[in-house]
Image 1: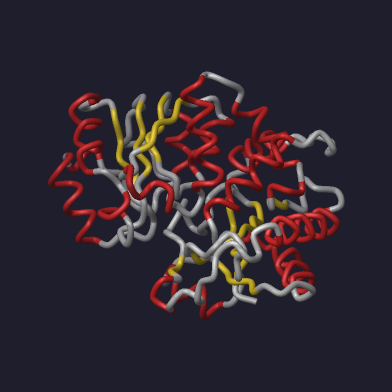
Image 2: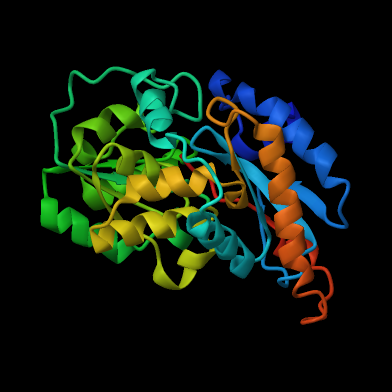
Length: 311
């Protein structure tokens, strides 16, 4: 078990502490790991890699207070979301209201002890949610950030991820102005509520929270890296619904409700254990369809990487 392992958490996020609201996922992790042992695959917490469709590994991690699981293969990650959305066999539950309640109850933040001192900050229409400094320069397009800065001038804030070094904060202030860079420790969701448009990435939970709040979203990712984003299999559909002007909230409720999505929340799903069982049976059945398609050695250790820091 790694989701709540103190050593693993410290290695990944340093002195930051996870919000207690995530503790409801502890039993989900235990049950998932137990049930996964019935299959000829491994499970790994919070990593990313590209295995063949007959994958060796299921990844699991947190996303917007939910437990998510998916194969370490892009094709299969996308396949499960499409199959979930197209399924008519599941009763639709209101995931979007749960997400809104997270914000209203001030438990949406993944990390504890967020600052709530907002008096000195004026309301602006645009908010840029940045990735952690370990991925900022690799995954976020600097030209897009400059475009946003030039377009909105003093009507935008840039919100650094809580895992951002002082050196990177300094670079951001030099580029975009000290008064437009929010403190890394401040509560993101106060500014998310105030904004009309949110610029974010495929590695951030802020995309789905923006959608349920009725905000416009736009990506800032480097395009040729976008499919490597830890939440690409979810956020890409959210960005697409935004571009098409279609019902993103309806997609969230329908897709998240179906077991094939690999998304579990014990506060929303009445029979979450059965949902895990159905998912594991489904995804391993899909895996079997590609059993002999590609012969590939297990990825080298350096090819399996921790997921990007996310909000």
